[in-house]
Image (cartoon, rainbow, N blue to C red; front, side, top):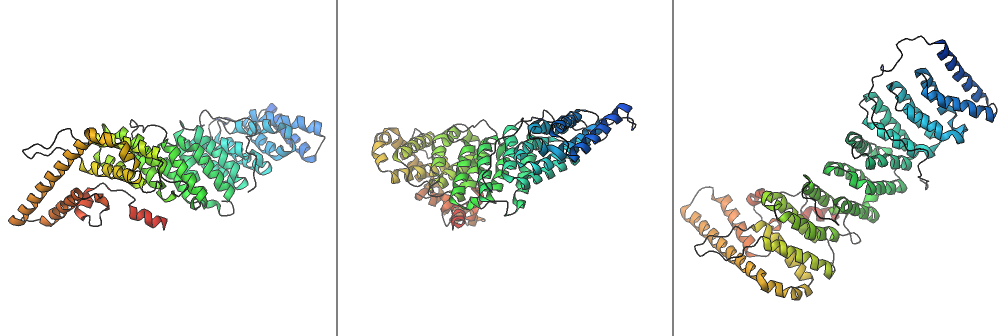
Length: 490
């Protein structure tokens, strides 16, 4: 597809509401036309004959204006005006805007049959004047909020026709309404579903590199207008079907789209009901698209500095499984960051130390053996991330040595004591089970052995190759394991 001028022609239309009047509403109570109405209709037919015979331009422009004015006449006049305006629209470029506006007005008529005719005629106009596709697509997309099934089918058909006339311009017009239709949820939902079903059906001859680039560009511009993770998933399914998504350029665009949607320059909006669900779904979706030029570093830094601190105070206590999923996602993202700059690593480390410190206790294990209530599943992920950052950036160990000495080291020492006490308790229970020969011991033994492994080495329990099926059922499930992602990359 060649490069096109995507400027909007004519006056941009906005539908304040969708007419839902039945076919019969607004029609004349009598089939008989008045004498005056008959004369007006006869005049329209005469104008048609004159224009069709090619009379002088000066005279014909005046008559074409009469056709445009007839779009505000009786029902019969409106129907004829729609047909006749369309028939000669390319002959009068100076009246083009007035003619298109007249057809747009007919798309808002009380009579649904008149609306449907105008919607079809607009497609015919675009076949003659393709530069109008953008504006017409914009207006037709607004009509998707109609409650009349017959009209809805006409609009869907008309939008498909516009995609075949000029796919790129039609796409811009449709996405213009996705961006501006945040309050018209029905229209936006139908619009996204239309794109999801119709774009893959266009065929390879229409899904050109230029079209796919335009599709990526429009989605990137519209991403913040999406409501909830369901709309995000529908839009992302559209991108997954493109050839561009398999190339570096497309993969980079998808990574940037996710970063834009999550708004990684701001704190996580914990007050939004589905904020964490959207965060996890978007993060999980983007994994197959990371590469050297667009790695996971921005998202990982976002998790460390803006997500985990925001969720650690109240959310973690009330939503343990969801918070654990967030921690696991942070660990997953860390695997694909590449080499962080020291300053970036410093920001992440400082934030992780603060979050980790909040989950540690200030006092040692009580002598009578009571173990403080530690969130071991949280702490193993946090310590793993801290360990990786310090391993990759040794300079940070020296910089944070004083902080380690002042309080944090003591808290970690108390944690170690608690872990050892917990380990002793498990071993004692384990031996008691063996001695007493208690039934149902296999699942208990596997679980206890897994706990011992988790307390004895610097590994993540959900990644251990010997992870028991009993514990696996207890851990929060995440849709993409490391093995899944390695397989996707291969």
